[in-house]
Length: 573
Ligand code: DGT
Ligand code: CA
Ligand code: CA
Ligand code: ZN
Image (cartoon, rainbow, N blue to C red; front, side, top):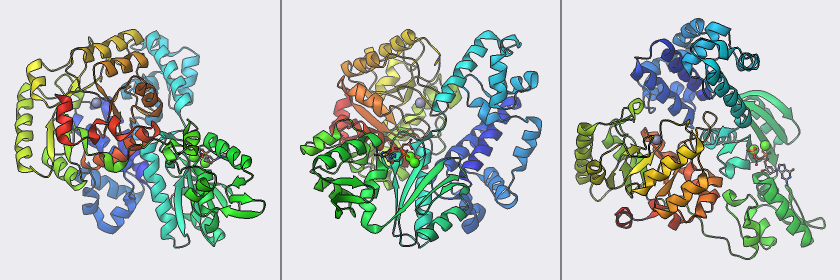
């Protein structure tokens, strides 16, 4: 699947354009949007092009004529000439360099021009030799920041966002099923547990022809390299750079195999101890009494024979779930069907791609009962924030569409309101009062000290206007660490002032994550699972946020957008 590579090319083009043509902001944004869209879709872009040509490509969110032509060029020649031209002028690994916090495209260019830095290794050397602090326009502070950025990168690299890993795992499973050689192909490992970041993919396959499956997998287009191959297990590196373990097992062992390879390891160890205590032996091939197979084909049977309730994969982290399952006391956690609406949606009134009405139609198609529009407030210039006049127009549009789609969906009026540096909100009270609810987020001044940031966020909640705190830690997976704040103090304030904490489902964010949720719950906070959609296809990302919420053992009543619309409106009032 070439999706990942194409996304990289488009991101790199956008970055290189920024170096010298920063004014072409819309073009730059178009490349970034196309990249995000292509990277997060599960369908193979080559396949779309082969089966429905350029028209098919243009149906992809964020892909217009210009981008579609470039995809066509890539499919036919293996290259994008615009990218090749740029690369000649900027012959350094821009994506690697800007993955370091503190380095943007322009800094990367300066580092290349002055110090010849082309790769991350070159950068590490330049930092260790303190060459950056002597550079004009950069200096000591920047060098320190880059050194820190390199440290962060080292800690987080090698893991991929769930939002990118899951579609990929689904794609590979489908290819295996389509081969006609497999009975089942099931995602296991941390991906099945919906962990926010994924080390490698694990797929469990049942088949009577393990050799043929192995052969098929090793020859797939997506397989860049076969790292290890045994009789029933193969490890490959995919063209996305992520590794994938695939194990072939007999049908009679499918359930125990799935239980084993779903993990987590800590959960498995605890379950195995129970098995031993009850006189069984448990491994990936089954649950045995002596040499007799007692259970194996179904996962729930394996648990049942051990006196355990079946546990949702998201709960299998040895956080007390095994003990509760033994007493039939597992909590009833949130399910996908419980989520009735989405409270963080952008349109082309600010930095979204689509018209409001198109988002409404898609939300109806997905069965949402309500959505809240949250286009950006004025000070958010990079995201094309609305001024007062534009807000009025936006507000009228929401009212009009609300009438038009009455009975099918309810539209709520809001705005993603910037929390300014001093903790005040970006809109005046009269505008805030026009909204059904207020979503407030930090977007700028991310480098504040811990005390300042904590105070800033708590202050934003104190006046009682804010209903939801958007993407609370502001991390971008593999790109930006969480902001520095006292989580407990912020969560405590959220509980006190009745501000729901967002679980942002965007693949690049997944913020809050499970650990944050567990901490926040101690302060009695409520949560909102939102997509932060900027195009139609994003509305489906809600499943990642639901997975994260399940990992935090949240129940429907903990989540505000599981309430029917009138109850929700009461809550906001
Ligand atoms: P990841 O890949 O780092 O995101 O996390 P996982 O959980 O997918 O870990 P991985 O891929 O190393 O292994 C997949 C599952 O296989 C793991 O969740 C549980 C099982 N497993 C692996 N190694 C062991 C082991 O030494 N003991 C037991 N009981 N289970 C194991
Ligand atoms: Ca794994
Ligand atoms: Ca693995
Ligand atoms: Zn935001």
